[in-house]
Length: 436
Image (tube, rainbow, N blue to C red; front, side, top):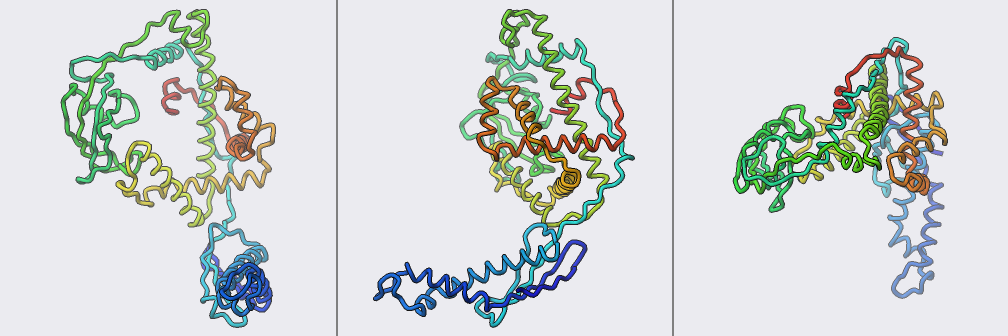
């Protein structure tokens, strides 16, 4: 049996020294060498007939390393269980070369442990639940959005203005280094649409098919993605075409295109309102959920293991890199500093630990019925909902997402019973823009 000593380095860091006797491992080494000898090929010997000494000469160091490494893994797990430690992340293992060990080998494992998750008095927390009653004006605004979504465009020879769709090619550079290029393939942009900085779209006003334009944009310090935050980007743009918007009339044909078979406009508006009510309910729940999560973060006081924060930082960096690739930007050309993601990684890691603690302590895991209800809610927006449900249940791993979301709903419900919930009237535009 391994000898174990544990040293407290800091609140969360532990240094464990473990001594593993070698005698019990020699039998495993011999057994493994005998297995190898049955199939190993050596010049002058039939398979399985080579002397064990020759097998040891060729494979002994490799087998010894494998057996000793497995012994480290096993003994560390046993030591952790024996000392009732919850290891966060992976341990750092240090030891002398295995071949230099005599009667025992000693290794030192340095690692962090999970802290006790302390959650404050939730009865003092106030959560605002948005309250909204839909009006006819809200339906009309949504109808206007639906009209704009069905816009078509016709080419014009004039200079571009806000609302026009332009086709352009562009290259983007930072400090003289190209970071993005469309090549010869033009891309379509609608000037003034959300999702880009205003200065970029403003620079595209006044262009005409066949003309070129060069301009610089300095992105704000809080820009997302963070890799462009505070950076000055130089753009070279060539206008391929300019087209103006053409909007459809709100008539029976328009209603039929929205799924109203008889084209009745009143029926169309009633269905829009019903759909809006569902969306409003969804967004209110999402806002309450975020308020609950933020309250849990604010009311929790404990140290977060560096290993957990580091893992979350790496995940956020991978997501950011993927987002850049989707925008046609090579992540290698946009240096990413881990420190940029630190605050978000700290919050995510802390929230995840709090949620895990609440779920385990209060048995808030989603039931099978709740998971099914979540899957059914996903399927509502599909033309053939039964096919989506079947897809989820064809592989149990696909149920991880709906199970996690259903469990989060249980946490939210549990917290709302502890806190003070007040109702706050909110405008339709505010709610819809907040979720955009």
